[in-house]
Amino acid sequence: MPPELRPAAVVILAAGEGTRMKSATPKVLHTLCGRPIVGHVVESARGLDPRRLAVVVGHGREQVAAYLASVDPEIRAVVQEVQHGTGHATRVAMDALAETDGEIEGTVLVLFGDSPLLSTETLRTMLAEHQRAGRAVTVLSAIVDDPTGYGRILRAGDGGESVIGIVEQKDATPEQAAITEINSGVFVLDAKVLRDALSRVNRDNKQGEEYLTDVLGIAAADGLPVGAHVVEDWHETLGINDRVQLAEMRRLLNRRLTERWMREGVSVIDPATTWIDVQATLGRDAIVHPNTQLHGATVLAPGAEVGPNCTLTDTFVGEGARVTNATTEGAEIGPEASVGPYTYLRPGTKLARGAKAGGFVEMKNAEIGEGSKVPHLSYVGDASIGEGCNIGAGTITANYDGVAKHRTEIGDHVFVGSDTVLIAPAKLGDGAFVAAGSAVSSPVGPGELAVARGRQRNIEGYVERKRPESKAAKAAARAKQATESAAAESADRADGGAADGGAVPGA
Ligand code: UD1
Ligand code: CA
Image (cartoon, rainbow, N blue to C red):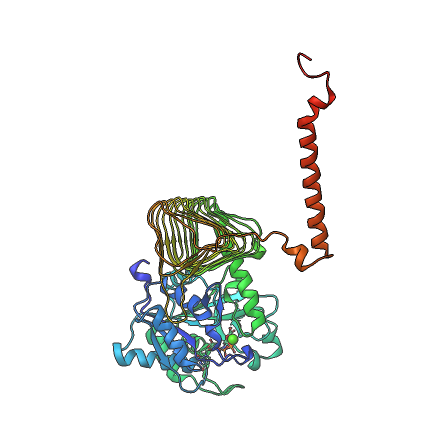
């Protein structure tokens, strides 16, 4: 930001109730693409590096203020007790800033907290034009097909160049209502002009409110230079009033995000079913298959391949790793590792290079060493596994004894047979083996084989005695018969030479 364009203050108005959301959550805290509505506005404002940033809060003030503090403790949350209009809200903010910082000098930007698509770029262009033209007030306007509900920009009859005022829909004459240039709600103003005009704004209108829009008319009537900057893409000025609009905006923003990543060299196979949060980052030649959500600070390294049907939250996926049909949160998937299908990786899971978490595997707080594989139907929690291990199908770390959690430590090149329970705290040394079906409850030393199950014993004739005439008994009898006749036949063949005569050498 060139220093001459740096605003003295940005004021974001967000005190309204948002009745049409029909929600216990304040309107501006509803999220799109991983960030609350007001968060998007705050980020666009922060892009201008303003000296002060104030947000006017009212309805749901505690929640909104708490969110703002989590973004940046420097943001001022100014309370507007009763909502007397956009002009009143701006005045409350200017007064609060003056109280702590002294009267504001320079350029002030006013934005609405419910218009999340407005970009820093647009604000910067508008600021530059305001400065260049030496104006006292610049409004961001848009030409739209249907201006219903918006304030209309009034221009003088002299060829339509000069802006003279703004009239709200409710106060407009039919001729004024036919105007299609609308007020977006974004203003750039000289602080002094703003202060002075706000002190003269009255409530003589249909809504009985102090309109911020009247500031422009007052300045124009004073003979000060005012103007409108027509936005290039009117979508940027769209505000959210209900959940239908929220969903539309979400799709619009998501489209922008997926297109941006495609231009950076990412393959998004189906942008319509791919959802990428603003904070996610994707490397070149990453591939995202349909129906995939990349939430939070998820990172796909170059060449990572994710989807279809994946929901990744705050997850790192390394170069060349492959994740399919998986749900992950707070996981770190190393380069060339493989995850899925139907895999659930929970916080603290770390797969090293080339490791595998296969079908129907759940992991939590678990480190899996280089090249180690947990291919099927397992639960690995509170565990560390060294490199080159093979953990058999159906292995379970029993990490919870009903009171506390315990760890399982497995060394390098360990082989665990299928259907094994490792009862934590458990320790398997380097190169240890565990027989299939074991319930391991004491440590296994390096290179030892643990067999922790009953020895097999077969009871002959059991089915014949207990279930005579059953299908099982008949099947067993047939099998026995077959074995016996096969044995008799081969015995016959062994004696056969002598019985036949002739073939005996030297006979
Ligand atoms: C406003 C504009 C209108 C413009 C439209 C663009 C005025 C008088 N009208 O109308 O010209 O076309 O936005 O969307 O400015 N707010 C407060 N305190 C208040 C009142 C409002 O903080 O006392 C906040 C709201 O939370 C909201 C924003 O200001 O974020 C706009 O208020 P809203 O009531 O939605 O104004 P509109 O009637 O839509
Ligand atoms: Ca509105």
